[in-house]
Image (cartoon, rainbow, N blue to C red; front, side, top):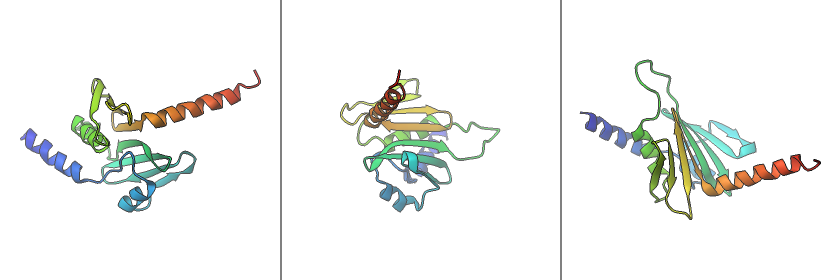
Length: 153
């Protein structure tokens, strides 16, 4: 029975449309309609469906960072955390054809391809996925800001 329910859940989640790394804002808006929220400072669109809120951060015209968060009221009789199955399905949807490697106890992953490498982290109700290229860009921005802030010392 448990295998049957997991299979049904996989089919339902697999058919639900979720934004993916590499999609343009236009593709996301065509799929979902207008975003729930727009954060211009970080070039982020926020969408929601019945099950999830998802934040997509854009750089160079495509999504390089996505955070999925369960959007359901807490149930006192069951965990509201992402299940392992939900995490695997969302990682597969964002694999860009690469294989994800679990690097820390089902909570941290990275893709194996060094060219288009991505990393992911799950925590409770959320899953965060980001390209390494974008992470390096953000790190460079932070370093430049710190350099400017400390210029007079």
